[in-house]
Image (cartoon, rainbow, N blue to C red):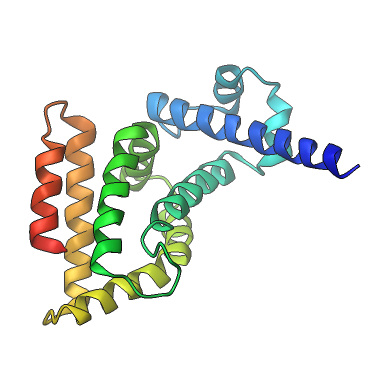
Length: 190
């Protein structure tokens, strides 16, 4: 019986992931507001009603995509889960970040398009992100304090802004020198 339950849970997780991937691709292609659940289900090759077995609405689907992507990304920052970021963990995180950006452009295009679209409830989006990111923010502040930075909070905000700029430029400039930028980030921010 346990085996059947595990197989069923795996199938549900796989179907949920299939819906999320199709939604990311369609949101990136059509834009969040013009994309419909029908567009997503057609792209995923599933029945329209199936989406509602996993998500309450298109907005819920979008928020879950943002939350899952952010959780996967920042989970790599404190690799040993001790609440302290070392220089090596920070460097490994930068590597992970750049790999995730390179391997999942759809997610990052969706993320930035959501932040830039005027009629999206950004309060919900930021609340979702903040719940995930707040403990990490403090760990990065602590890291910069350990590096004797004069204003660790400003360093973290600058770091976030820099990453936003790097990712946006990479997403929309085919000739963006990501590997070279990564080396400069290592030298100046880690």
